[in-house]
Each structure stands twice: as C-alpha cells, then as structure tokens.
Length: 436
Image 1 (tube, one colour):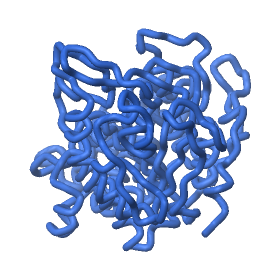
Image 2: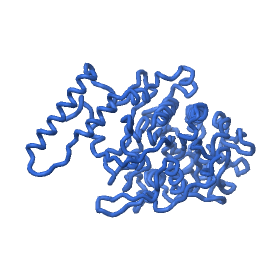
Image 3: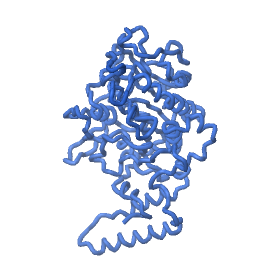
Image 4: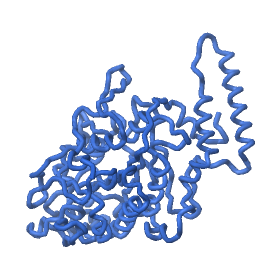
C-alpha cells in the first residue's frame, strides 16, 4: 500500500542503519560515452595533426598548465582544480568501463556489446549503505537528472539505488515522488501514516509465528522526507538568485550542477550529474561517444563545441560557487567518463572522430580540502599511455572513499554469504590527499 500514492517507501524499505555519520559529500559529473583526453584536459599541440585534433590549448590560472581552448571558464578556475592525466584500465566497452570506474571491480566477463550490468554496487550505493539514513530524510545517493544505468545495488539492497530527480532545468521543477498529491495536506498525510501502521499491526496478528517489523519504519522515513522542510529547501532552486542561476546556465547541465551543490551542501553523500548530453532526447551527440557516424553526421569538433557551450559555464560555476561559500573542504567535485578516446583520429565521409581508448584518460577534481592547482601524472607525446604516475580507477575510488570517510577495506556479505570488500586494491592519491 503506497503512502499518498508514492513509490518512495518501496525504495526505502530495505535501508539499514549503520550509525556512520559524515559531513563530506562528492559531486560526480559523469560524462558517459568516454570524453577525449586530447579535447579536454590533456592537449598535445606538438603531436602530428592526425593526433592533436581540431583545437588548440590555452593557458590557465596555473602557470604551465594548459587545457583545451573550448573551456576558457574552467581554465580560469584551474587553480581550484587538479588534473589527473594518467588514469588507465583495460575495459574498452562502455558498460564494462563504467562498471570499472564506478564500482572499482573489473567485470569477470567483458561484454563488447555494452549491455552488461554490474555484479557489485557503485560508489553511491556504497555511500548510502555505509552512511545509512540521513537525519533529515535527505537521500544519501542522488542522480540528476537520472542515474547510471549499468550499475546495480546487488547484495546491498534496492533501497540504496540513487534517488532520481528528473530534469531540474524545466519550468516549475519539482523532484518526482517528493511532493504531496493534490489535496493531501500534512494532517491527512499523518492520518494515512497512522492507518498504515494499523494495517501492519493487523497483518502481523494474522500471521503465525515471529515476523519482521514490516514496512512501517520505512514509511516513516518516507514521511520524514515528504514533511521535512530541510529536504524541500534543498531541492528548491527558486531559493537561488536569478544572477547565480544565470551564471550556472539555464540549461540541463547548468541547473543540474546548481542542484547538486544544494544537495551536497544539505548533506547528501554522493550526487551524480548524469552528463551524457546537454539536452535530452538527442539522436546526434547524445553522449560523449565521438566515433565517426555518417548516419547522424557525427563529427568530433562540433560535438565538443556543442557540449563545451554548456559544460564550461556549468562546471566552472560549480567550482567557483563551492569555494565562494567555503564548501571546498566539505565537497569534492569529480568530472570523468568511463575511458578516453583513441589518440589517432579516424576520418570518413568528411567527418572526424576518435574510438574507445581505456589506456589513458583524464579526470578533473576540485575541492575536498586537498591540494589543487596541479597536474598529476602524464601521458606520452601522443596521449596514448601513462608515462608518469600511472593510476587506476581503484586509486581514484580509494581517494573518493577517503574523502567520504569510508573504509575501502570494509566487507559486505553477498547473496552467497561470501565477503565482498569495497575495494580489493587501490591507494588514495597522495598528491591530492596531502592537505593544502
């Protein structure tokens, strides 16, 4: 029986409280499809033309650090960022690479069709499980406007799946399942909660022998989310000034970044911005998967310009805003995809593109109270392979878990009763975690 016609209690029904409490948060700008390292944060202006690509590098606020020219506002925030240029793995299919990056577990059987789903929970699900219920009822794991589609909570339980907000850039945005039905005021909601408790009690009395406590506790949690002023305020973008909303951009990515900041500031553990494309429902440039695709006239240069027009103001505003509000110790921002792109450009039908390349990728991080204004690692002259400080997805995840106060050696029992460690290898990146 749904509380006010909501599905939220079902989502919450399996949540376990662990007593873990932390004030830190992570915002993940998730660029599914695989952004090119050369057209983002690892340009190679001296490489042959078939490698260096259509754009030039520009200087940043960090002396000696250059990034792609299509991100001038991010370049101005470089002193508040660290660029990791040496992350690599071996999974060359989208879902496999995503599973590697988000869970820290290498798929046992790679799936070249990119239809695989994870056998282990992702870092947001881990965060939700370890931290448990937030005092205000705020979800610990949120996906804006949606969540990564290839990961599953598995042995943690469905309650740790991300809470999905929908598109925050639409007029009159209200997150799904987080408002009362028309005509249902707070008093009537409380009456329904009481009625549900009575049904739970009646059901227990009909059953023989000892039973579980039912779902009343999780309806209570749903009730707290619906009735909590703090939760409602966290999702209310109208509380921000028009000037700030304009700075982020009145776009899907812009308002997603702003909402992510509000949720992280309010105490959500991990917020994923699912940044596949700047607009929903596209056939062309629907992700960062920049192959040559003549059918859709898919071309690398216009694809990158299309994305950068929204990503540059949105992500730079997020970084600037977090620091201006003194949240740069509390919140860690991570921008990444599942892999990089082939250093040598492919050409066909007058179009250019790059294919999948897990052997070198770039990751941008900002905040966390850590050392910024630096480059960590390096690739060779054609951005093919790491030649300095090679790092793995597990190293990156160990760093994220350290910020969140989560022990990566902690174990959960899977469906077969076998212990599954959060990470089996990986070390926090020391160049970052030495506090500034």
